[in-house]
Amino acid sequence: MGGAEEPVTLPAAELSVLAKRAGFELVGFAKAEPIPGAVLLDWLAEGHHADLDWMAQRVDERLDVTKLLPGARTVIALACNYWHSDEPSPVARYARGRDYHATMRDRMRSLRRSLRAKFPGVNDYGSIDASPVMEKVWAVRAGLGTVTKNGCFTTHEFGSWVVLSAMILDAPVDTYAQPLDEDPCGRCRICIDACPTSAIIADRVIDAGACLSYQTIENANVAPEALRPAFKDTVFGCDICQDVCPLNMTPVKAGTRFEPRSLATQSVRALAAMTKAEFDAWVPGSPLARAGYDGLRRNAAYALGAAGDAGARPVLERLLEDPHEPVREAAQWALGRLG
Image 1 (cartoon, one colour):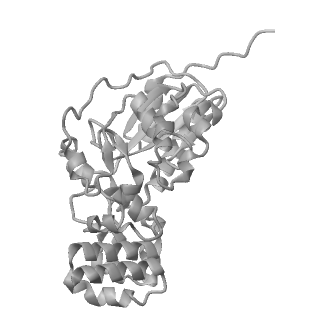
Image 2: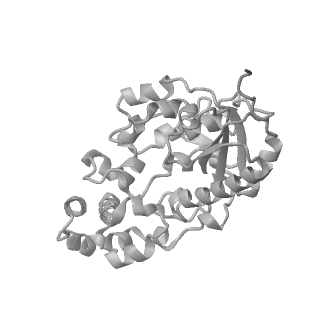
């Protein structure tokens, strides 16, 4: 008896067309070869993931996509630009519009439908930031860009203002990309020097626990007191290391899916004073739901104290009576900063 039949080789150019029709702006192809363990395990061993325990789970699948899709041969790396404007906001740019998970999921479904209609014998596994797939590694392998010193994946076309996803196929393609042979950072360390909490502890090594993105989104308890002064103008996420990057100086405006929503256009004071009814009206379909009502108000209280906003005293005094302890504690710290 002969061995298993070799899967058909797919045309990469045609797959690229299907992916771009689905809404993905950058598309690349990498062989589904295992990722060296050190890429992830060294970072975990140093404890740089803080309490993001999910990063230490399903490690075998993260390092070998054949554990997710048996017979995997190809990873399609996909990227979308999300930059929309330079309007000031206490919310990181990626989170100002519709939740990018939903946008990327819609585009992934469209690509999957096209793929299965065109190549019905091919199996796939789609990943949109919530699966054990290391999207940045695959984007590098597929030649879409490089990882810069701030740990962000950065492209020639859109800088680092991109969100990533990946689709794994159990068929080869006729053309695979090579990683870009370049280091766009060189001796530049602007991002390292600009980080207000020194979270970039080495070239391309980020201490998650010190990062404002982690503190404002993932940490549901009180923030370390030493980091609170860095909360100025920051309520959800942080763009500082991207804002200062010379590779991001010519952004491209994204489509309407990433247009800022009401919650992201509020002032820090308004977010601190936000009622539960306002939160419930503003948050559906927004990434800010992850921080929650209490988390956003806690962050806003820190931001008001860090900014020394004396006009926020009435709001902060009301928060002293809040039933949520981290909110009360944040308000007390902020009032102490006002003197």
